Image (tube, rainbow, N blue to C red):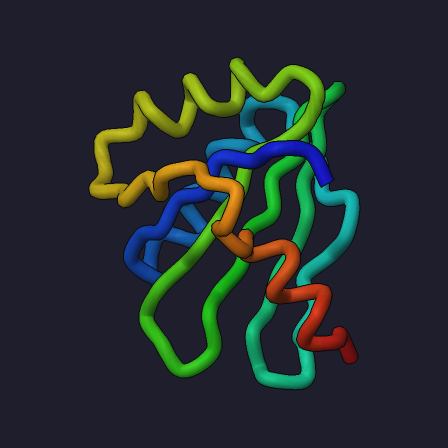
Length: 107
C-alpha cells in the first residue's frame, strides 16, 4: 500500500466528510463493510486518489486515510475543513487504519 495521510475526528463527522468527497467527484468504490471486531469502513476514489473512511468499534471516533499517486486535491479539501481534525504523523512504524481493518477480517 502506498503512503497515506491519516486523520482522526469525532464520530458525528463521518456523514459530513463522506458528503464532502462525494460533492467533489469521489465515488464509493467499496461500500460500507463491517469487520469481525465491529469496526466499519468504506473506500471512495477519484482519479488516482483514494479515501478510506472508517468508524472505530466501541468509540465515538472516525478515522480516515488519504492515499494514491496524486492525493493533493483530497488533502487540500481535508485541510480546508473548518472542523477539528487530528492529523497523525507519518512514520515507518505506524500501522494505518487500512492495515488494521484488513488484518481484522471483514465479514
